[in-house]
Structure formats: structure tokens, C-alpha cells
Amino acid sequence: MNVLEATIQDLPALCELLGILFKQEAEFQPNRESQETGLRAIIENPNVGRVLILKDGAIAIGMVSLLFLPSTALGGRVALLEDMIVHPDRRGGGSGGDLLSAAIACAKECDCRRITLLTDGSNDGAQRFYQQHGFTPSQMLPMRLSLITPESIA
Image 1 (cartoon, rainbow, N blue to C red):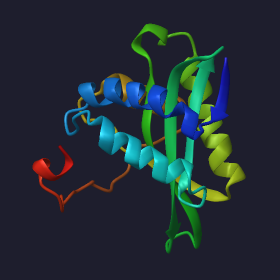
Image 2 (image 1 turned 90 degrees about the vertical axis):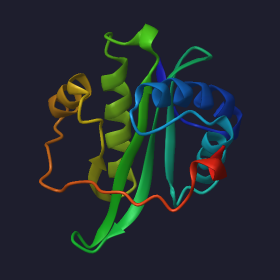
Image 3 (image 1 turned 180 degrees about the horizontal axis):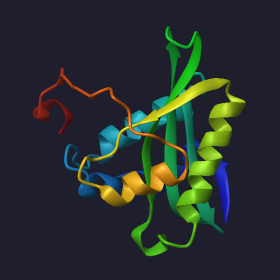
Image 4 (image 1 turned 90 degrees about the horizontal axis):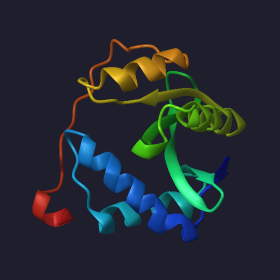
């Protein structure tokens, strides 16, 4: 298995993986057009972030995205880890750990000083997974204000 930087040619497989992820997340719904637009914005603009894809031969079995932001607290670049998914049929064999390790290495190579991620509060398995890889809970509470209506992304 290989973790590679995703290309535009990977968009169909990445959208399929995001469809699986967004069906299991409480706050999101699959929307292929929106997902393709967002992925394209990252892949075509390396200063925005990176999308990594985990492949077994030619088959995409996982993905993760890193978005880059400047941090006034740390005086440098930080990363937001989003959209990590390993296909349900391929979980439990270390693929997720390989994918996360590659994302951490990528963030370091891109001079990031911290990685932040969000996970569903009810997803104990994901929380344990990230903690096993060095992530710790934050005292910060995520809050959101949507600036779009559901109809505008349908």
C-alpha cells in the first residue's frame, strides 16, 4: 500500500470515500459536487493544503486532507486535519495508522507547527485512534456559524 499526494485524476475515488465519511458523520451530508469543488481547490493550490490518498495497487482505500493556516499563537503555519477515512472493508489492518503517519509527516515537511482535528463527540473509536497517535483533547470548544443555506449546496 502507498500513501500519495492526490491528483485531479483521483477526484472520483476521493468523492466516493467522502460519500462514505459524510454518511457516518452527524453534521454533514454527501454532496458530490460540493466535495469535488472543495477537493479541487486543495489539490490545485498546494499553498492551501494537501490531499493524501491511500492506495492498494490502483484501488483507493483511504484519504485525508490537510488545510494550512497561519497561527498568531505559534507564529507560523498550522494544519487542520480533515476528511480522514479508510474504507470500512479495509479498517483494522493498520491502514489508518499509515495514512495518519503520512499526514503528520506531510505537515512537518510543510513546516506546520501543530495539527488540529475535529471528530464527532460520539465517535469513541476515532477519539481513541487519534489519542493512540499522540493527539490530545483540547480545552477549546468548536463552534460554527453557517453562512449558507442547505439549498445553496444542494
